[in-house]
Length: 304
Image 1 (cartoon, rainbow, N blue to C red):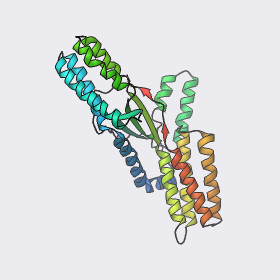
Image 2 (cartoon, rainbow, N blue to C red; image 1 turned 60 degrees about the vertical axis):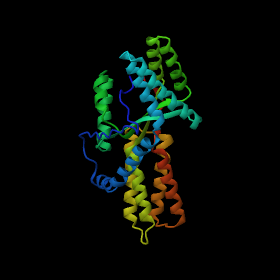
Image 3 (spheres, one colour; image 1 turned 180 degrees about the vertical axis):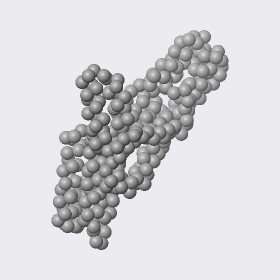
Image 4 (cartoon, rainbow, N blue to C red; image 1 turned 45 degrees about the vertical axis):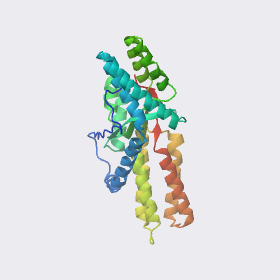
């Protein structure tokens, strides 16, 4: 896959909302989900902004100049190519001087939001149908059926490897001076192919669970805590975690079982109306555990 032919210096952010027709969630689950939607949207925007803020202007400009140099060589304009290379080398030298500790420097970022609207029942129905198709050897049909089963913020970041990219770019100008234009173009392509793409995935149901736990925490700190309302938010947080689990985010034993156990312990504490420091500690521990689980980061892969 070739790297995109366009670059935004501050990062490119594409917001794509994908919805799938499916059975609506149960009334209570759906109502609670709508109640926390403003907080979930705020968290989504924070995640996108973090990716935007991480983009390094000098690195993005160096890559932009590299691509401009390649285009100039393709058009036979060697002097123009050398001018672009001078800019690229200058930006890279600045990066090495200022941030020598960095391995990968973000130069571009893209955020996509995909949100499946179905409930647990709908997810399980689709998974069962896909399993039947796989049993019949209909792999592509199963794949098409499973594709909409995602509810996530997917942030894709293109990174410049500081240990490799500048060294390769340094080789290009001497090749042009020697009249080795073909080799110079190949070297520029080699440099661009060292760019590394990383993906981070934030499951949206986990964001919803976190928002519901925050609401339950607020209610537990009220002067007159409403047991039923707190339990409703806890139950719905557990439901959202089940949705995340059904969609394949995380590991049942490592991620979900401890969270379910903590929520159940908290529910028992609330039913006993045991308000106070112990409840506060349990709630804080649970919120921290859910917040720590919500982000998955994929392994880097090279942009070709």
